[in-house]
Length: 201
Image 1 (cartoon, rainbow, N blue to C red):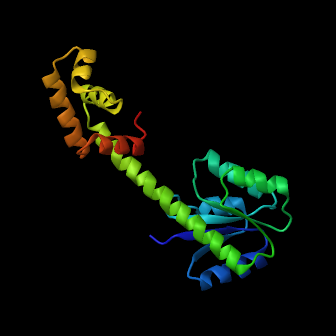
Image 2: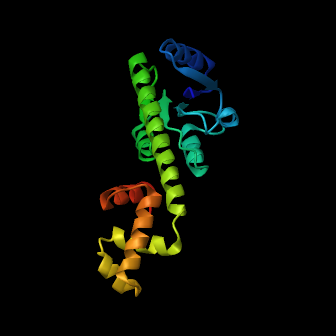
Image 3: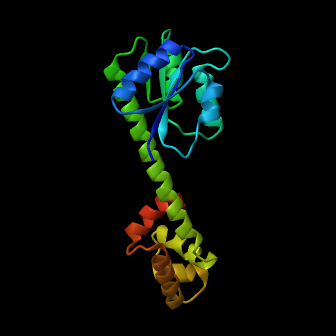
């Protein structure tokens, strides 16, 4: 699926000029004149990033960034402004902005920021997919298997787990084998890495 560079600016001339630069580099650009227009057309399933003007009527850039966060939209943000100040740039970067560019922006700086924004989005989506697949595997475990797994993750030996749970060591070995098989791992190290990806304590 092709990534989209969303450009949000109330200045049509800026949208046309910067859109031309990005399209020349092969980027798919979707211009919007306001935050509302951007949100109406934004599809979270489509990879991309947003180049966002800081100063706009109704909903400004920082408010838009906060709105995206409140809605759980993780689209990487690149700020573009003709009247930026240190306070605004600090707020933007603390909230996770990829870059804070000043108009008139150099083409190379814009292209570099967009490239980093799209790469950030690609990595985030890949990580989310891996977490989802891992979570599905963990969901297949029985309550007892999950209990045994937690002890294994804590570094406990089979005989220690058996003593803690009040069952024989042979049964622990069976549960442990089922855990490893269901999760598709061959070692405790692989189990730990998978648990970290799935955010399993």
